[in-house]
Image (tube, rainbow, N blue to C red; front, side, top):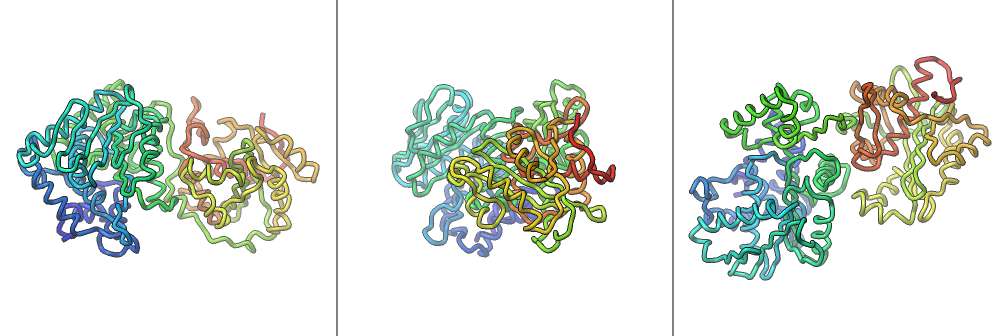
Length: 555
């Protein structure tokens, strides 16, 4: 039964290694769901009864544009989204397996229309008196989903008399379920009890509406939040956060299986080829894969964007899901390339080696990082440690969606201090490296911020410290060295999941002289371990280039 559905067939098609018309995160999500659908997942399954119910409801709905049953007119990706969300359940109690669904998709791929289909299915299947809400940046956008729902109901004879449509809400008369559209500009979000909510055009929202909806769901047994948007030309919106969490989950950096994400965006290596490579269009627009007319329309828009700079931002953001702001903020390096450089911890390997240490001291209540690097036969080797306050573990875990307690147990980071970092602990740790690992610490590179007292103590203990000025001209060479070493396979790091999360978070900024550096403010989360690594690499790079360590500060 499951294998006969269009959802399963689409997932099988998407998961094919040779299929380049979908990006790697679509492939990863397809493979993850197929594992459930094929009965290979320990805690989740696709419920046949739920599939039959959804298929039956789609036969009752009429597609308002095609005037055929929704069962026949629905896009393949929508089938995948709907069956995954409504029919994937936990084996132990039958609850919904996915509590969050994220759809990143370009314009003109029927996202609002398909959201309406989802809401109608939900209103016909959820427990009596459930409450549904959609949130959008303003009343006009909020009304679009309501209009989509209304349109489908009006043209579906078997549904029309089952719903009551008012100006401010839609009610299913079979079970007294109400759907209320909310506009962030007009409506308060607190105090709502949302069994299911949908955030439409989340790229234009901050985190408050989504977090308010989620807070209302704490006591809901079978909750669902749907986050949908195209890309927006800003780097401070809730969609970016949701996409980032979804990517980390799909990359195995977060233990978070309750997120179902369809991220229709081009793979990183294709982004710079947007002017010529048709795969950018296909990977961002699933409808273009099956519709030559849609593909041609988007290709025509591409031609205009190439010719006219003023059309470029809209085209790249809205039709390719490429964040374009003209200022060159981009991901540092593909996390999959980073993970190829991972190696098992071997403490004996470090004995007798000359190493350079990088330090990134945080504000007292945030993360601090230490990195140790060396070089052998043209290969860079690194080992990193993170430090955070013991009393802020729960808060940081919730705020950053990073399981710090687990990472501490794995040895990726250490808790020291209560509400603030115990700098003395960090200082003693660095001082212990020669004894603990048998290394010869040549120099310690540091950012002057918050580090003066610590540096004075380490220098008093006989350790040589070098200030690494946090300027693009200084940071560009080691940043470039690290990236190129990862890409060409001449970088190795002792396995550390928190370091991988930091790499995933890292974003680079380019100055007017084309110098690139990891920008903490523009990054998608904590990057302190990457910064510490770059500080250490600066020192190591000087040794490689000049064969000496007789420098002290950059001017």
